[in-house]
Image (cartoon, rainbow, N blue to C red; front, side, top):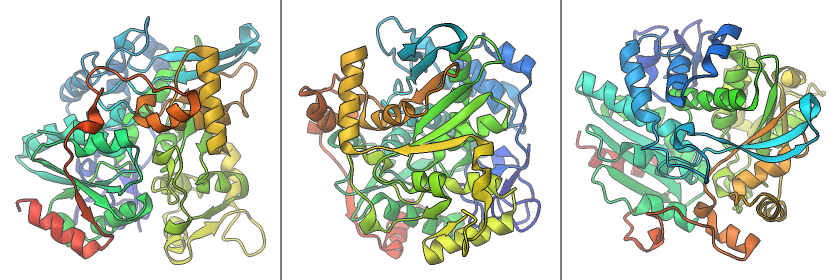
Length: 499
């Protein structure tokens, strides 16, 4: 399995000068490709009907191994199996609700079922908040931490991780990398725009290899700084910069696993289809669903649920991708989705335009120069590829603060489950696209406790917290406040990498 960049000027891309068509290990630590594009397999591996049937009886760790080995063909099979076995255990992923086995890792919970038999309409919630930081990002980040440690130890190397977070990525990365030999983490976050719980989860870490940087701006400013540093190849090489943001291919492929797990848990036969609704901001999570579908997983619809920052919803409804400026990005009660430039969207556009890398380069140059592009096919547009969106099964919707509050109350009242505001975005939108005979699975974003301010407003009571998180906001916090000056950021990194 070899990889290419979405902006490659030839049939292959390079992970480093002189290395053509890299394998998984070569791009694991790389993040962006040198040409500024994102890595994807040259062809998507396919899953046979026999494999899908055999996978129904596997543990989550063994399923992860079977899927990942299709992408990491250059890694010794025994090493990869050891890493997935170490990652996906009940010791790492706590038990969820009463009656659920910790070994299930991502159990399904029934919210609604109308009718019976093959024509039933059902709404399911796939629990993804059982990891150490109580968010779906743990599902990939814990694996990434173990892959990084394995690769660096083998080569006697170090890595300085530079990333941006709107809330959950940062804490998941820091908890996965804290104390790991040869790794430092520099994590940017928008100052004052995360929940108190999210902020405390990150800033309370006192580990010497963790550097939290609060940026005076919004998440898109943080993300732009990460891309600017990643595109400075001499600096990136000298300072050994890597990334754990969802632009990192290993992050995305690790998330593919729970789509397969959700499908297998919701069905009894490979002739059945399911749909997924995914709370979406940076497009990484739903991009993994797109990849699973391209591999042959029987997915009917992929529904992108957005909040008031509805850039993705606008595209899937109109064909216009219009990036908002920082001042136009709303600060909402589902803050991890307060994103107006979806960095993973390029991977989908690459497939949408027939894997034409020159076309992708031109479109995303227009994003930088003119703030977006138009594929609606209307007079004066940049193309008409939007008409192909239906071939990939994509739909979308958006919700407001009022919608989130009402959905949180409804799910609590009817099913006794407290959902976080991002998951509420998903449930609200999912209900618009439910179809008889096709289970709709909403991917949970995080445990409700991480967004207690909104839960308190919706329910009039605090969200329950798991043991160990009772007074996290009271812990001492350590962070550095900085501006959006890229040169200043580079100087700070260089001063603290030890290189």
